[in-house]
Length: 388
Image (cartoon, rainbow, N blue to C red):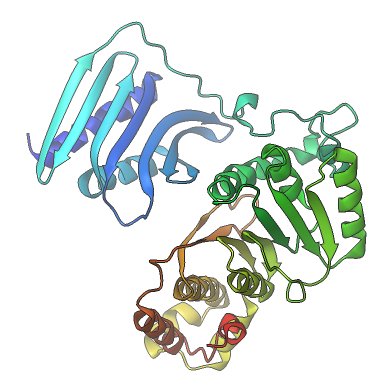
């Protein structure tokens, strides 16, 4: 059988086991694609209100990312991955195992019958999957997540899931920092949902400072931290640019509007922080530059409609941020961190300090210049802060 035929045979087995409920697990290994630090992908079946889905867990060196797909999307991803990116796959069902190995154009597929194996539960929202398993915490009540009975309120279920997802992403990044008690600065902390949850999950093995310009939120945050016994968590008043981040091991900012995200990145770079993680919100500065400038004519079809212009401005803004971080010695990734059903502003830029990144400064500077010229941009706000 041809190589494509063997891939289709495996996909047929996956599709059948998904449909009849016999799928236990599918694991892809031997990755050699373009995603840095991706080690493997594990796939299982989950039951959602909208219907059954394939749940993909992308396992990276320091974190996991979970994405759910309907069957056609999942099979298309598997087909492309098995053809180009993964050298092995292991399918486990209640009736048989199937192993897949690819060496260049040669593919080996082996099936082994099994018995006595049960399929795992497909229930998605099991309590044991939540990182914050105990809900009877003072800070959760103070933040409006739980009621007096210590149970998550019906109108706060989505927020609680978001908090758990953010902890799932940020905790491994912080645990990878080479410091006994890393110092994390959250710029524009707001009510401090992430700060309280992270401090709780990490067991106080980090110092977390929330910077917030609204005095009432600072006062409330410090009162709740004291009532929770979180001695290493505090909130300080001030703006992002005015705050002295010296000594910070990590600088984070969730949904800091427009150039406030750049302020946070600048503070992280200036402090030499090992980790900088920002979830941008609004991209007005670059959009104004694109509207006032002279983008290349071939981009007219992408820029003449307002909604397309907005999306292009978002991508260009964050692409330039990633390049500027790389220029300053950071290995950078951009990915979705929560579902767009919760917020359309769901991209996360994660930058980890790496001496190897940004070595070819001239090449990175050339990319920045070419991107700006293409979209008619005079200067990215972050360039000005960095003095470039």
